[in-house]
Image 1 (cartoon, rainbow, N blue to C red):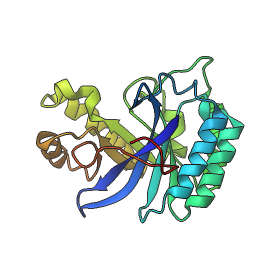
Image 2: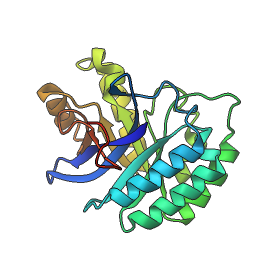
Image 3: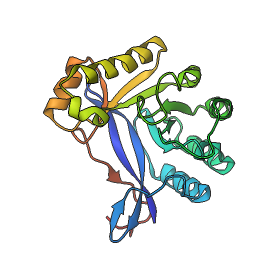
Image 4: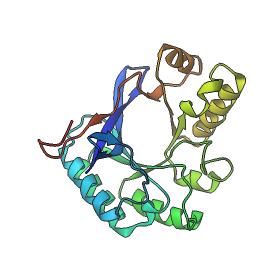
Amino acid sequence: MLRFFIQPQLNTIVDSVIGYEMLIKEYRDGTWRMPASFSAIPAHDMAELLIATAKELSLKVGSVSFNVDRNQILDDQLIHALIAAQTVLRPVKLIIELIENDVKPSVSDEQLIEVVTQLNDFGIQFCLDDVGSGINTWPAVKPLLPYTRELKYALQNYKEHLNESAAENHVTFWQNLATKHQMRFILEGIEDDNDDAWADSMNIDLRQGYYYGRPTLMKIHPDDPD
């Protein structure tokens, strides 16, 4: 069984929830777990779940975000489901987060740009997730920037260096890149007071993490296991 959990994204300057990230989990061995492989989830199953979840969401927020890898975003069935979900969610914006995982065979920038342009035409926005890690590194993602509305940086990727200059340099690089290209920049992985204070010192207003809210189950049926 697959279901989405939603986690809030906040603007800490005005202390308000601006959106939710939808995180897919699988129920097995009596508990909810991350899927062993995102690519192994059939596009048909992902598409049906996405539309069913969109119908359950009645949110007074700006956006909901949905993770895909480079193979999934090329699947016609999933693309049609994304477009259908955006219709259901409107005026809430659907944001597609391209995760940092590598895939085989590799997907070219030209293939990605063609699909992202199509999604943009339907009002669906594009985000690069976990920038600076996996294959979402600089300058590999440079060709995608004209089609991107949001960058997300995972603080947990460098948590052991939080108080060192390396973490500050990494965050500043991507923060400045987002500003230059007029994108949103979200810092995720905020887990405690120290993380929150560090984000304050970096003048980052858009944030996500357990400190502000853990992912909660979006039930499709009343008897879905908690």
